[in-house]
Length: 183
Length: 130
Image 1 (cartoon, rainbow over the protein chains, first blue to last red):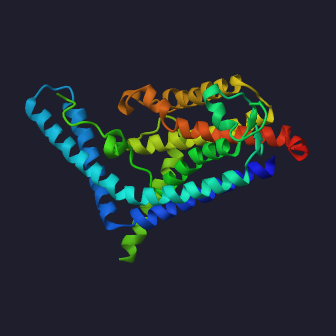
Image 2 (image 1 turned 180 degrees about the vertical axis):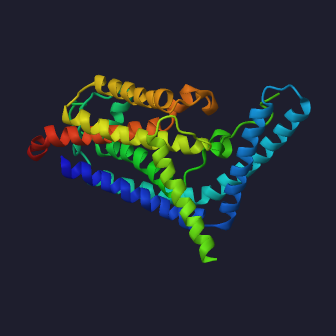
Image 3 (image 1 turned 135 degrees about the vertical axis):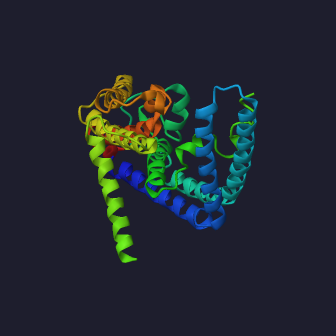
């Protein structure tokens, strides 16, 4: 089982680098993205500091200022998401094709033996396309998803592409905090 | 110009080593919160992989393995920031925020190593028959 499992780890390392490489080529290196990212980070940090300083005060002026900054941050976050979206679609399509190719290669093959029986709602994933009812058997897709979860995020962090903590805390992308939550 | 870059490089180097030494030294000062959170994050990843290898070698089976991982992982990190570094948790948004930092990635890394070592060492021959 070593060969299959290590091959899957290798595949997910390669796809993670490929994904990050493509995103760098299409998004990260562009001036617009870099400017927006710096702006979002700067604003998030400023907003966090302001909230810490005046979060509990009932001063209307401070509240209004915070609301205005939140609105600006939300707009910038939305712009940042739109810049990313184009490449995300392209990468999504490429990865769906790659995944279906790997799925057909590993179709019906037990790649590993799980040391625990997964919960019923995960069994659909961990036993996907496998014959029999031994739920300790692990399918390609389950191990691949786990590998991607750990490897991709670590690679993003190592390469410095992960969003900063301040920005994620203030809400990222289209699902950011609503302005006026301090009302 | 070159002296300027050299000084910059040296100061960067100094900063880089100081994060490492501060991480290993008790009661260190952490002026930049992100630096400390990064230390917690990477420590978590290392703990996840080490525990995954240990659980696979023993071999631990069933939900007790998952449960023990959560306890040991959170326990070590909790001990590290309360007893070893003695930081004020409230500055970082409370104990929960620190316990959450990098947990899911570490959990995924743990599962991958546990599954690979466990099935590789204890079920290698079955695959050949299949």
